[in-house]
Structures are given as structure tokens and as C-alpha cells.
Image 1 (cartoon, rainbow, N blue to C red):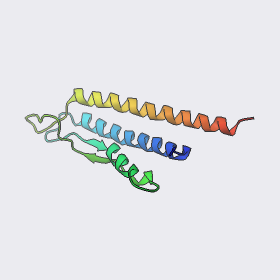
Image 2: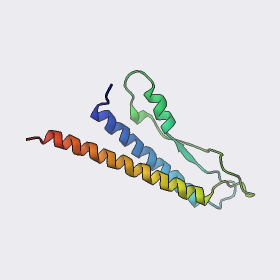
Image 3: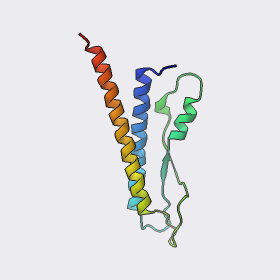
Image 4: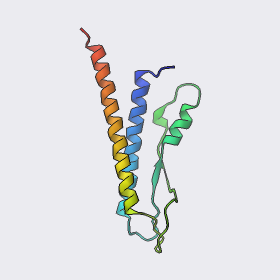
Amino acid sequence: MPQSSSSIVDLLQAGIRAEGYRQQAIASNIANLETPGYRRTDVKFEDLLAEALKTEGDVDLDEIEPEPFHPGNTPVKSNGNDVSLDMEVGELLKNSLRHTAYVRLLNRKFQQIDQAINIR
């Protein structure tokens, strides 16, 4: 069943919102690069969205809040900190690319809607 324009727009907007939260988490990780005991934070959103989309009926994307979590998948240094600058820069790049893709897709969708409205 094809998605309606509004639901596609809602999905893209939810993705943009999640990437904003992830950007904040990455910035916090980099800011705490040398803070003893600090554990890196990431944002869980895609799994929550996929789970919500499996359910029957309409999904209110405003109710799906990105959740911060500590992945624990990086080695812990002697000071108890597990932030790797190389990893954070890589995550920053991936996040920026996803954000740009969402914004471009959203822009394209709005252009399509505008063209449909302004057909003469």
C-alpha cells in the first residue's frame, strides 16, 4: 500500500528530528573526550521507528522519542572514559550525511506537492 505524502513528510521530519538529537549526543561525547568516567552516548531511534511501523493502524511519529543510550561498544580507557575521537568524527560524518539526505528528500517532496498544486 503506497504511503501518503503526509506520512512520507512525517517520516522525513521524524528522521531530521532524530538526527538533531544524535548531533547533540555526538557533540556531548566530543566535549567530554577527556572527562574521567564519561561513557559515550548514542541515540536509539531507527529501531523504535521500525517497531512502531510494524503495528496496525496509524502511527503518531510525534510520540516516538529518540532515546539516549550508552552503547558500550568501545574500549574503556584507564580513566573510565570510552570516547574515541576518531569514532565520533566518523559518527558525525554519517549523521551529517543522513541529515542532508532527509532534508533533500523533504525538499523534493515539497517541490512535488508545489508542482501538483500549481499545475495550470
